[in-house]
Image 1 (cartoon, one colour):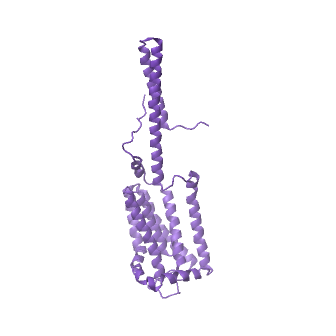
Image 2: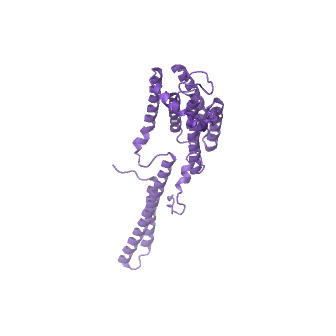
Length: 311
């Protein structure tokens, strides 16, 4: 089966053929020097034009490779991963995440996670780290309902800025929907709040999964996806995402330290929230191609191929 040529290369090839015909016609009109001189001129013109066309083809291929690399970096995909793997891993990760939440819920319902919860709580509540963890009381508020609503508004505004605006709206609605689903799961599992130690603050309602951990992951995770697709410098984008990731981690740990959630509650919240963020990123992966367009110009001094001839 014949490989499909790049459209721009095909156009340049047709353009080269037209140039060859024109130049050969001009040579035919000036046959001075006899038949041998005439044939030599034809060979020189043909070789010269074919060489220039080949050079343009190579430059176009190099430009195409740079664009593929830029798009791969935009989508955070290593170039060594096969395309079949790229298409299949997000659904697999979603299924694994959902299965993890279901298994945790089953383990909690059958009291199979008590030893693990007790082990982690003793580490978090150890006297050696108590002083360092005191700020977690205020960090926990960043996963509260008011903070999450504020992040949803910011997400919508960021989506409007980087475009298209509907992806910002979808992000805000995703955060709100995650809150509703989290409450439904809490009511279904109906796990009581921890009674292994005296809580620092008092919370009401059921415990599994942790709403602060789940909504913190969704809200700050969706915001991180939009930030990575913005036109900010790459170092700034990465720095913001790292800060958001640390914040998500601290919010979850704070719920254990405050004594209002078991570690398995937080783990389930993180996992469920990560699945939601992954689905959002997958559905809105075409949010903006502007960073890719600028990334193509890695070397502005590189000579680009001439535009295809219209004749």
